[in-house]
Image (cartoon, rainbow, N blue to C red; front, side, top):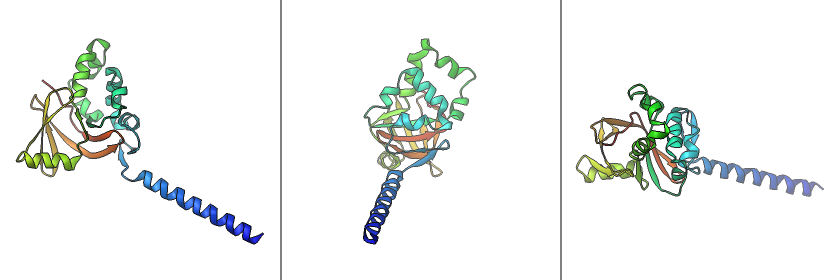
Length: 188
């Protein structure tokens, strides 16, 4: 009987150790954004909806009808503006953009924040080096963004001359990567 209990105890201990290891491995690469864990095993939308810093972006993505696209296989690189980034826009801009009649304009702005492919900070840094200090990137919207390093921070410039700084880089998702930015980027 003692042998049976010893064997059962050993099996339970092995099972718990295995589950702890699997859990730890599943958590590897997880970053905190907006007070929530961003899991590399989830897609861009499933992670973004949990960030308290991205409620405006999530509402805009829903209004533009881009949820299914950003839940898709990708991969995508998303420069994700925070709520405070949207707050920098002139008063009433966001409320106006999420109206159904402005869906095309909203979609244009949001897809300007997306690159096809997965460009983490190392890839962007390599592009900057190759471009002798500045990288030019084409967005899903079709416009251009420029990137460079300034004081140890990755800076982006939009087609209107506006600048945004990456505050959290390399938030890996199962269908791409997110870089949190502090200003909304605007296409022509």
